Image 1 (spheres, helix red, strand yellow):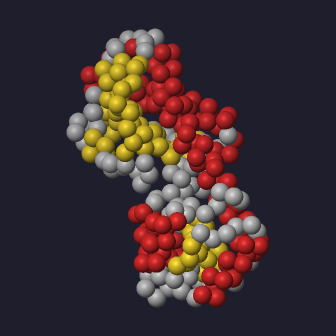
Image 2 (tube, one colour; image 1 turned 60 degrees about the horizontal axis):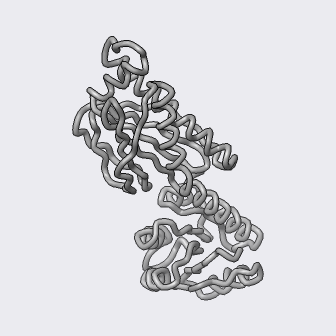
Length: 284
């Protein structure tokens, strides 16, 4: 596990020694140690770890506060909580605060090393997903527009953002479940949606419900095809799409997911389509 850069944090020096000896025995050398939150922030900034093993109960700040502080520096750092305290409420609270794994003290060597290997395997899979997913999704949108409307789409202004999203008029949100949960969003104005649905249906839509249904079907096709392509590249993803959620109204603010998404503007014969997608590193 050459790519593992570990920082150990505990207010008890003996606990740090125990974990460090396990790591060394398995060919992992810690890049830093910390006994309180200020030391932790300093070490993280200096050593740039990708994994932190820390206690939950500490005098100055608990494991949750320390995890939040670490993720303000680098949200991609994995955190393993190793604590004598372990019950469903504490574990659930930890996972809700982006802890990657929770194990109980006394730290068992096999459990710790297995947990680290699992996290790093997940890390590798996520890096691969991040590298390929948006290309796959934009290609899926291009193919769907071509097959369903016999027209084309060109892309401009790709960006990465976790900010709020302003609806163009009709917004379809598709939830994605799997190893890494995600979200895909298509937003377009009512006139664009009307022209698009007319081309998809091969006739004028009878009412707003038909317009929404046509746009939703486009979103279903795009997300389903993209997830199928990604699953073929890595079965571990196991991505599945959820039924669409449709939001209507101009200048409506949509809260962002708690993970970063890629955004792009698709220009078509019917008008502009705003498109975004993203996946959360800390999934199932």
